[in-house]
Image 1 (cartoon, rainbow, N blue to C red):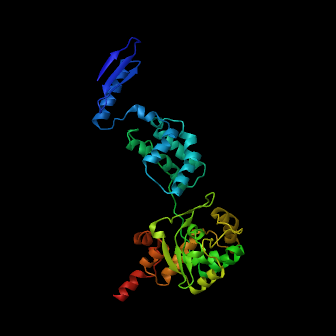
Image 2: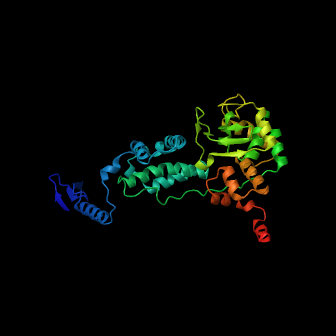
Length: 345
C-alpha cells in the first residue's frame, strides 16, 4: 500500500486486492487517502473486502441477475415477486447503486409502508423482495453486508381461528348466492384450501369410491387464470367424501377437464371477486362476522378431530406438510386428549 501526490495536487492511494490486482483511489487530502487505506487493510484482515466497482450496478440492473443466481422458483412465486418488485421496490430504489442503499433509508421505507396501512404480513413480503436480492449481492461479493440486516419489521398478529357449528355453516350456505351454496358446504366438509377448490376438475372425482383427488390449485387472481401444483407435495392427496356430499357432487354432472366449481358466469373461479361480491355479503347477512374463507378449512378440520380423527389422518387428509405443523395449528382442539390417554392406560 502506498500514497503518492499527483500533478493535480490530489493524493492517490494504491494497494493490491486479495486477487493481486492493483487498485487505487484519489483524494483531495492526504489524510483522506490514509484513512481509505486503513479501512481497506481492516476489511482485508477481516475477509470483508469487496470490489467497490462491483456494487455500482443499480438495483434495477441487478434484480434479474440476482434472481437467476438464486435458482428456479415456481411460476406463482416468480409472478408475485415481480409484482412486488415493480410496484413497491423499484420506484424507491431502482435507480440507486446497490452499494449506496443504506440501512437508514431501508428502515424509513419499511416504516412508510406501515404508515400507508399495508398489513404487517404484506410489509414483510415486500421487504423480503428487496432483502433477497441484496443478500445475493453479498453472497457474490457485490456488497460487504446487506443494508437489510437489523431492520425492524412490524409485528404480525395472528388471526384467531374461527370454527362454525353445523347450523352456522347452513346459515352461510343459505345466505350466499345460490350458485355457491354447495361450494360453502363442500369447503366446510372437505377442508380444501380455496385455491384447491378452484383447481378441481370433473375427472378428479370417482363416484364408485366417492374419492376426490387433489392434483392442482388455481392461482389466486392470476390473469389469465392459471393452474399450478399444490402448495407442497403433501397437497397432492386423495380423500373420501361423505355419501351426502358425494351425491351432491354427482348431481353437478361435471366431467373431464371442466372445472367442478366455477364463477357465476361459468368461468374459472376468481377468488377476489368471490370474496368481495358473494362471500363477504353472505357473512354479513348470516351474522357471522368476523369470518374468513380459510375459516371453513379450520371448521372442516375441527369436525374431523371431534369425530375421532388422529393427527396423522388429519395431516394426510388436509394436505399439511408435517405432523408437527398439524399439532402446532390444531393441537389445542383435540378434545381431552391427555385425559383420554390416561384413562386408556
